[in-house]
Image 1 (cartoon, rainbow, N blue to C red):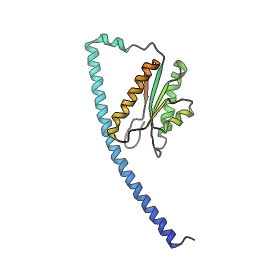
Image 2: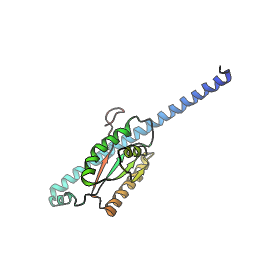
Image 3: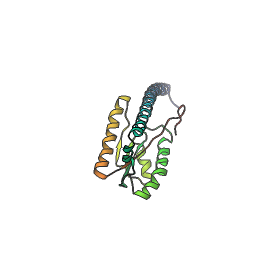
Image 4: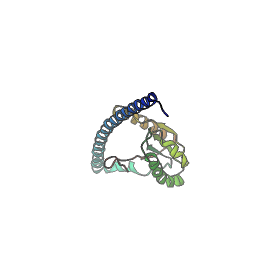
Length: 182
């Protein structure tokens, strides 16, 4: 039977752990809010760019010739997973989705060059037989997003230059309502 001192230490450890968990929840809530605001801003920017490209192509239709399918079969994919656990089937679902989309393309055009953003996705893709060429950690703050995007763009440009990659597919989760995603 545990002594009074042992029980007191266990209660104290439990209280400390509860405090840590509450702090982690608060930090996660703040970060989720920051990321959601950044996502809304990026969505608005993407909408603006799409409208601008449509207007440009209406005015200068000959530019559409650059949108013809590439001669090269080389292709790549950038997949966004997570770096941390405790996110349920997040990475598993993305890996299954990516395999369903990438598998037929790989059979037709050969294997893709793969970059994963988020370390936990790599082993899930490996289970499907994919070799991941590069793994980036997720940005830890909104301020770090710019650097991560530059690393992705640099890698895609290197693939284009060194390996003739002409198509790049992107797979990621999109938040729906509350804490759910698709």
